[in-house]
Picture (cartoon, rainbow, N blue to C red):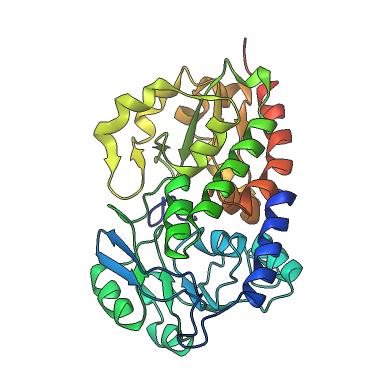
Length: 341
C-alpha cells in the first residue's frame, strides 16, 4: 500500500508555463563572474531539521519524497535526480505525468535513486546537486545532517510527511527564487479544481479512508492532500473527523480508528479509498462491519486500484491535478448517483 503522507498509511496551461520557463532558464542571462543569475539574492529557509541557506541560484536540483519534482518542473527546472517511486510508475519506470512533462520539455529524465530508510546518499553525491528539496518527505535528522553537507536541503516545516499542497509549492518557489511564479501555480490549480466542481456535490459529505489489512480502518484528516483535492471539488468532509483525533497517528495526517469503529462513518454520503489491487478490495469489502457503512452498502464508493491514478490523486501539484481530474470526475459522478437521498 502506498504512503499516505506517512510510512505505509502514508492543466495544459500549467504545462505550457513550465515548458516556457524551462526554455527561459536555458537562455537566461548569468553573471559572468559568479555563474549565478544576475538578480539572485540569497535565501534562508528554516525548517524542522535545521535551515537551508541557498546562496546561489539552483540549477542542479534533487528531490526527495513526493510532489517536489513536479513543482520544480512546472517552475522551469527538471531535477537531475529524484527519489524512485515504483508505486504508480508506468512501464518507463517514471510517474507518467512526470515522464510526459519532461518529454514535452525536451529535457533528459532525472536519475532515480533509492529513498526512505535505504536513502542512496552516494547516488545523490554523484549528481552534484546545488539544492535538495524534501518538504514532503520522511527524511530523518541523521539523513539530513549528511544531505546538508552535500547541498542546501529544505526539509518539512514541522512533521515528516505532513504539509499542505500550497505550502509545498510556496516553499519550493522560495527555494528556487520563484515565489511569484509559485503563487501563480497555486492560483492555476485553484481555478482547475473550481472549474471541475459540480453543484450536485455541494450537499454531500465524504470520508476518505484507508485499510492496512483485515480488521483495520483509518480516516484521513481534512488537511491531507488527497482529502483536500476532493474537498476542492465541492464535497464536504464529514464533521465526524473532528471526533477521531483521539486515534491520530503521528506523521500520517490520519486516524487509525479500527474496523470496530466503522459505524462512526454512518453519516458519510460517499466513501473514498484506494486499493493495491482488486483482490485486496474484495477482501476488505466482504468484511461485515465494513459492509455496514451505509455508503459502502449503497455502492457510493470511489475506490480506484490503478496505481498511477491512486498516486496522482494523492498529491496536489501542477502536474498531477490536470492528469487526475479528467479521470476522477467520472468516478465521483458514478458514486454520487448511488447516494441514498
